[in-house]
Image (spheres, rainbow, N blue to C red):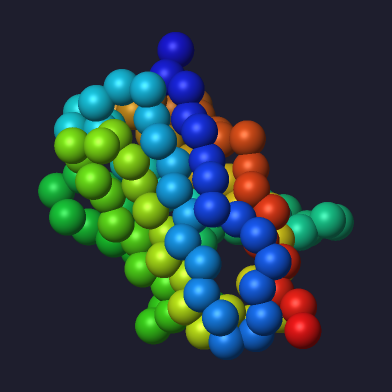
Length: 118
């Protein structure tokens, strides 16, 4: 079973930046898709950004131009650089992994809290 370990959440003022990291316990070279979702209490988990092997990335409209997803296959890690943070970015952020195209059940990290507050 692949383990995912997240880090990098915290408290930041509006306009500030944070970088989230998610390290997988197996080679990221072979992982089909890695990314990030977020969730606030009372709402469904929503897509933030996804990186698919082969170079394709997708972002939620609400974060385009502010967030950047990247993957370091040598470190088995996916990152989410979050700039120009807004109050509405406050959420628990979850790392997402889909191991292969044939895999229907994704893996999730433990979640890391991001709080944007003045």
